[in-house]
Length: 175
Image (cartoon, rainbow, N blue to C red; front, side, top):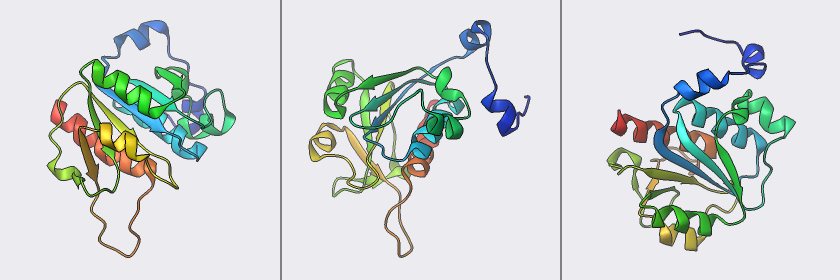
């Protein structure tokens, strides 16, 4: 495996042949009105790391091309499949109709610990707005809601970090 530094990654330009070699995993990301471009870029980088099928950017948020997203994504937004959607709720409903399990990452009375997660594939991991979280209608459509245990004073965790922990738990179940 070749390790690239951040500068090399930002200038990375994989060939069509390299991109076709990627075996996409039956996992989707649904980003629900993410505010911070660092989080958006980091989620693209995560999506590339685990070779997900597609990222959906939903609602009011910044999306590529964006120099701020690019900085955190280190170029991965250029080859990771993604689509801009107007509504998280409608996107989740469309995915469910296709038989895709919806896993929401949120603190909620229905939440289970991410440690207990046993996903079905294909699945979509939904991560929500950093300030207000996901809308109740989106949570109502979720097949599973997972959260991370919080042991300290702060009872929330960065959306990118939460997404990464859950995504690696999901991929661990697949591989």
